[in-house]
Length: 426
Image (tube, rainbow, N blue to C red):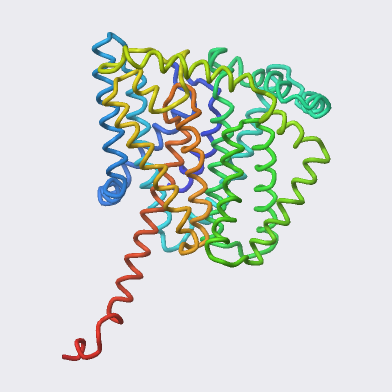
């Protein structure tokens, strides 16, 4: 199972390849992974995950069922809600597989997943190199002109959109949110590698150095993605680390070292011009901000006529908001279920963030995994939970189940010591 898990992480960013009948490669990988997990793992693990995530699963089921009925009422197809049901099953499967790997007393799966970043990064860079070669894109020349001009649009238009085109996706899909999801998969692998390394540290400095090199290269790729949602989620990770130090009331040597490393890296990026491009991307490249504001205003005006049964197509007019788009598609009751999903995930993130000082170190990257789903609730085109976010939520659910089991084991070990001596000997 650990090798299949690694294969899923390798295929997750390759979202611009269509393998047949409109099925994209990463979705085929999720379906295969889900089928194998349910066929090979006992029902007790599935039941354990479902019990832990029951409110989240119930809200998504309610949302999807209402959406199906709304689509049938309006004469629309049910492919999109069916895909969300598949992804919900994938969420459970990933949580089950994660829990099984963490439970393994030999730790072989955890040791293998320490290399998630390298596997995902090599897969992504290799696939993009092939795509750019086929499409005649010179990446070095595009990067050079981007840094010289300080214009992030050069990179987006002449590298990403050109590289992702021609492999089965429509031009609209390539120009949309695919870049955010492609690099979101790399961010997920980055967090997972860090958590697994905290659980099973490397035995030699050489392996540690190779691991750290992969983490550093992945961070550079994430910054060069020009995806604001991914960069915000990445930046939240050190902020969570700082919050943990502040809540604990002390700064550790590791925390101070990480701060110095971040400042040094920022200095290097500023020197070569990357920070200038990022600054322009966030502060001056406002076209997408204005477009989304117009779409949001249009969505507000449509809410009244979709109050009960929805029926408004968000295919090319998405508000980029999970709750509002659900209201437009399936009505206000479905949007309330979507709101429950958002509150549950955001509430979990806040709760974990403020309890990090009491948690083991590996819970920091696990908590950081939640940032991207939280951000994408309010930025994802189509107003849906995208596949990468479903997988991230599944990984977090698996870790939380494992953390709960560790707590239960620790409590059972401590329990006899809490009983007064007179009672124990009576």
